[in-house]
Length: 219
Length: 54
Image (cartoon, rainbow over all chains, first blue to last red; front, top):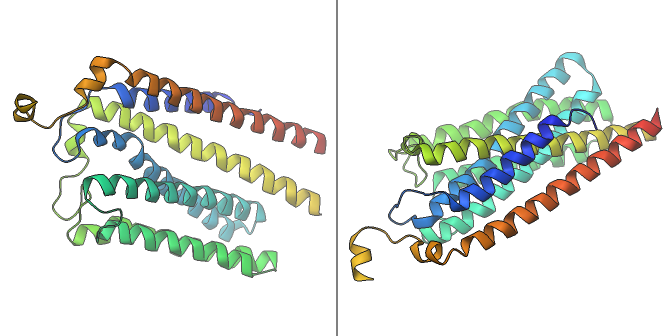
């Protein structure tokens, strides 16, 4: 197994944050109560999604520059795993919202924006599946991937800040820096983000290696 | 109970007194170790296939 150290680091970070996040002391907040612990589980899903999709877009740009089909496989595999984490973030958010905001899908711009962004990525996979010519598919998909990532940033990063939102950091609500002041939360939170991002990268490398093996087999 | 509510939002004080939250933490850790171990196993399996190719 190549480069095992970061996989071990990933495992240690995840075991530490999942376990410690349950037993660490958290600030007593109204409405949220113990669910503030979801900060260690729900939020890293979105951070991981955005990080993976950024890497995916970088590989798409690399493909457009070099025309090397290897980079197209990298981009699509990483986007796959990124969207998987996005769906996990969406579903965990629905459960959290049900018990704090009173509805799994309140009329919130961040939720709608995230849903649109994920749908744009579904369109990316449909586009890939609908073109048979490998070169053409790679070109179209790479161009679409750059567009999709920019739309993701607009729909989850810009648009929710322009209107009222229930999410922290949007529409006049305090952002994560409120929690940053609480060092107990931020230590676990940033370790969790690092751990889940590493896990996302790990699963991506497995997907990439399977795709490369498949490609070698077909020749 | 009335006194508790006046002090602020109610947290899982009872749960911690009983101490059984650690049972849940144990279950979570076991599941996580299992899943991560499986991922290591898959990783090695793919490495072996890659070696056989060459």
